[in-house]
Image (tube, rainbow, N blue to C red; front, side, top):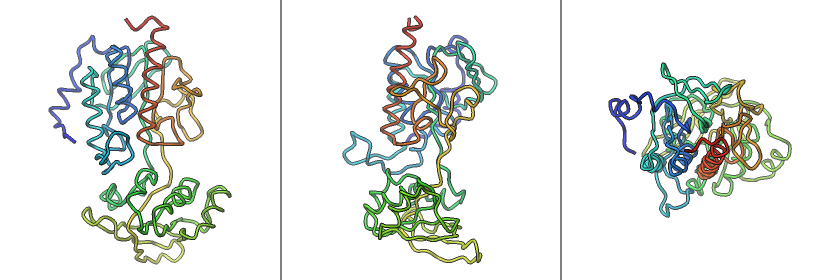
Length: 331
């Protein structure tokens, strides 16, 4: 992945002319959904403006090997995949701005998008701001993310074939990830802060019936042991009842304590689920506000894969283009 200097980012994302402050389409968020939406809207001559945010490329920029994205027979690094998508979007005349959107006003059209002290307007808006995996907040966890620490068993489970791994969490996500990992791993240990799981009964029954799944109750991970060359070699575990710290041997750690969709900008303006994901109309990317579309993990709490995010990015672009045509705003 090519790293951009602060000066280069300023040249790319800083000095838009007055005319450029209005666009037919503004895309909030990068990643597979945002960049795919940009490619499609740009190829439709809609000249999109994309705000990439603080983490351009989304969660894949902290992923090492990506082996489940179609078209790469030998896999590809997450940052490299995102860099390729960005370059492809820019080739078709997408303007990528490396700034955070700080406020939106969806009560009027054109929609108003505020970025610091700058104000932009858009006839159509595509939200692809993603969701962030909730993590433990450990320095060692951050250091080894992508090097034995993961927040997605579906994405990375294959790399842990015949190894012993741990999963942190006690809800449906953690139990589902632990069960999925038994397809590859020799042993999976669920580490939970309480003495019983919070997952649904059917999920618990499946896990308890699986001989590869074991449990560490009333426990929390204090530190992840390992380095980027060897990967994870173990954990330091604190028993929350006795306060005793013990060493636990494993070759991988999956953090499954939930995701937080990045929707704070849209509260009170778009319909959200109880978990704060954007609600889209079935079979489309239309949101509760006409002219606003949502794609990727910001509205997908089921699959959360790069390929499904890219697919909904394509859908959002086509939905936006067709909607703009009905409003006679494409020319």
